[in-house]
Length: 165
Image (cartoon, rainbow, N blue to C red; front, side, top):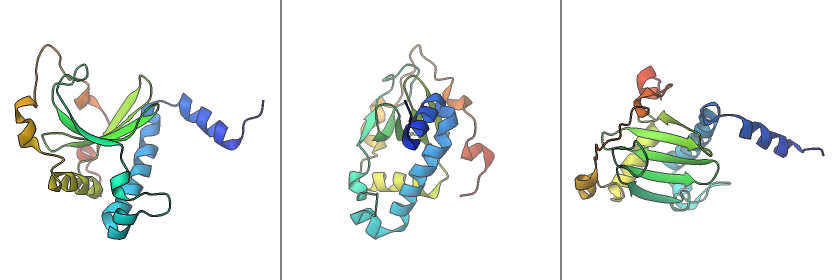
């Protein structure tokens, strides 16, 4: 059996970990958001492969604490894709913004708080009241038995390395 180029690329991608794949995935999403951020016409009407912004993501929702093991703090989630792989942007109550890339029992994330397009997203969702910390204030934290040790241990953050936008 001979595989075409697309099939070979898919096999190679499936063998890489999320940590190995996340930067390319994030770069692709960043290009999209930068277009939306910089061009009102693209935001409203889309452009080539991009739909209008209101059709881009799959959902936006609040994720309560302890929804997932070790997740003691609630956050807002902008889900971009699901299945294997999936990706999303999380807005945390301390102002941190993270990008998550996950694929069947594997996952990686990057801090994107200082990216202009990420700041724009947070401002946009706050302006339309999709992010409303006051409405979830009574269900923001739950420090039961679990402890979210691994979240702060990730590498390659734009905040820690002081990358320029």
